[in-house]
Length: 98
Image 1 (tube, one colour):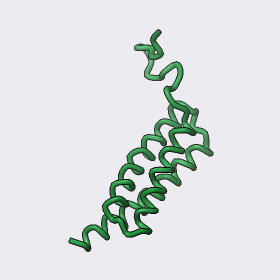
Image 2 (image 1 turned 90 degrees about the vertical axis):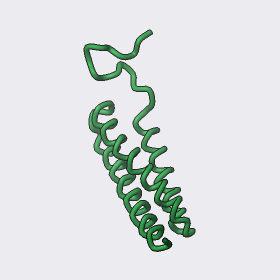
Image 3 (image 1 turned 180 degrees about the vertical axis):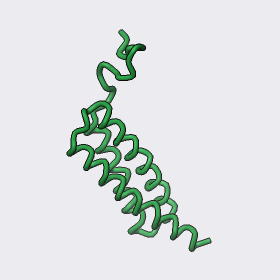
Image 4 (image 1 turned 135 degrees about the vertical axis):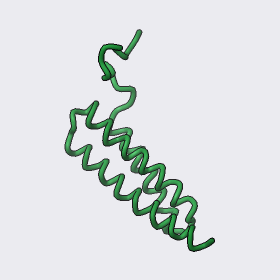
């Protein structure tokens, strides 16, 4: 059974729901913030960067597979916002410790 039509770039059934993917990204971004609060700069930078990558992927995923649902796009934007804060402040703390 093939769920990918070679003539189209869309899958017949997405492998994971958009909301579930955004929840995973939110959890990663919040872990980055927690690392920032407990002064683990490396963790904040790593989880912030992972949240940025996954949040950007979520934006495209929602646009392509969920029909551009505004609520899901807003949640993806929140993920990106939290991830930017965690990454930048974690990176600054890491640079200051060197």
